[in-house]
Length: 267
Image 1 (cartoon, rainbow, N blue to C red):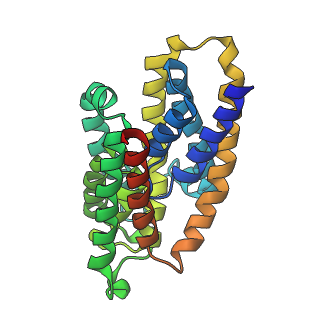
Image 2: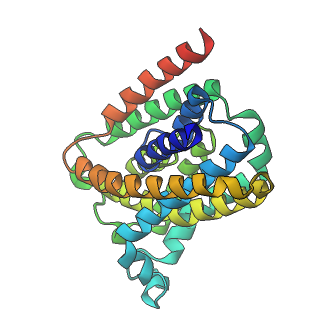
């Protein structure tokens, strides 16, 4: 029962943080250490509940994803296409493939998360600063994003390979810096998250499946369902939030969390 409760709490954290710029990986590392929810099985659990979060985005943008399987979805001149998505994910996938072992071995600790939280916060604040007063010039429609802008956002996404930096934080801030509005940057971030996270999750699962046995299936199922449900509603909330407010509140939250993390684990 204790493991089920811990699994539910970690899954809620995943659902709340996966698609907002605060680093879901960083939060799960921190919460996992606090709850002593660690070990080989939890590595699979952390990956599996991300698949639940992915499903929530597919449901929200289902028409968009279905379009990618049509002729128009492959036409670069008719809005956001498969090529625009590929431009945003290929850089990160390529680097992650070769750096996977190093990242998992050396960067998954509370200290590295705290550093990533602060650096990501500074990037968010910089993105807001650079676009302040220029909102009318920013692209507010994801069907008008250029391949070049998608590729540059993909380069910013490389920062998210450092746990705590946040994939959505790096791409949304990067989107602002290459001329996208908050809403367009967030929508593009959510869409490219699906293939990127799916590939990463499957790769991680294949690497760690030997740690599983039948007893853990219930925990995985509960985590998957909870993370998916929470992520679905929180993504919708976040999109409404961006219509009225900027990202600075998330930057300040990240700094506060980094300070707490450093204090909790090292003092």
